[in-house]
Amino acid sequence: MSKAGSFFRQKGVKDAFRVLAWVPVGIFFTRHIYSLASVTGGSMQPTFNPNLSSAPLHHDVVLLERWSVAISRFRRGDVVTLWSPQNPELLTTKRIIALEGDLVNPLPPSPPTPIRIPPGHCWVEGDSKFQTRDSNTYGPIPLGLITSRVAYILWPWPRRGIIDNQLPTKSKDRVKSLGQTFLQSRFGEH
Amino acid sequence: MASSFSRFQHVFSRYRPPPLLPTTIRTIQILATLHLISTTLVELRICTGFSMLPTLSQHGDCVVVSPLPYWSPFTEKHKDKRPKRGDVVVATSPMDSRQTVCKRVLGIEGDMIEIEPRRGGQRKWIDNSGVGFMVDIPQDVELEHEENKEKHITYKDLSIKPKRNGENQWIKIPKGHVWLVGDNLSNSTDSRKYGPVPVAMVKGKVLARIYPNPTWIENNLKEIDQQTSNPQMLS
Image (cartoon, rainbow over all chains, first blue to last red; front, side, top):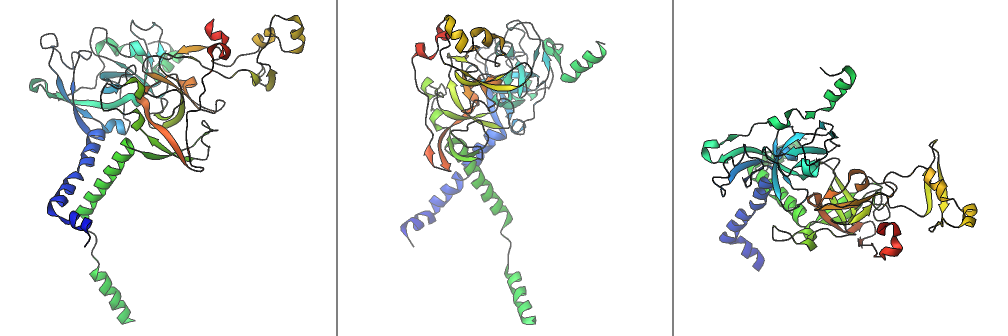
């Protein structure tokens, strides 16, 4: 038997390889199926970090559901994490307000004309009632920037639970889907 | 006859299917390792389409794509680890997040870019009735001289003709974005259609072509004097 072969036949080396072989599987799991993250900042404020002013160092720990992005399942009202379009190193959390084809009335930082979301893009906004850096600042964003859906708050324990899929009240009336605008153009407003 | 059948029977009875659970586990481990290598180190990809035509053919070229040139160990990346002008990159398509595109970076953040850069020499015009025709326009159309008006197409004629969409429109690339354009300008869906692309969408740099004609894919942009390149930019 050659030297290399005898090296790989040792019990300790064999066990080490048995453990190392699971590392890529774990990396795949955290990249494409589920992973954990902590949320800092107050742009999603009633949902995450509601009392940031009293506890500025507090971070919410959340569960990221990555497989829904892998199969590109995007829905209006989902809370998602995305790479900031202005800073490719910054991961931010926002809520999807509108998907492609929708007509959105933007909020102040952008001009007040309605925007039709182009194909493959979406409109994201923070939940906070104050101004956040969201699509109102940088316009519709490509869906390729979205990395995961935020599914569950794990910590702090009293606020644990599934994150609801709902549009915040400030953005509810500003979105019209393609079908709605078509019906309005045909039959007038009802 | 009976003996051969019994031999088969013997072979079949000796056959054991591979142990199911260890095989599945080993397969999953190997696939995950391959996925990790292809997403972090190097990947072979097949690029099809007309958009990169002089560089990559439309029949599907096998290229080496690697995210390593844009990787840095720190979360706060250095500016020089961003895509540079002239890099051929693979990016997620802004039109469809399930597809990727292979384009050349023409501008990085802060650059002024003309949306439709084709100009000078022979160019195609489409008149009002929708008929396309080729016109020869010399690089330096002199507008002031009366005698040139007879020889060449005058400025007045040019302004009547419908312009290309995006011609003479300049855009400043916003922070954290790049301008991606295919090498084949006349048949390419790129930033001229969907605007500047965020750097986070860039997945890797195209390093080399493997098949056919193995070569390194290089930065073929040349720097030219600003004043000779375009006087309109200064005005």
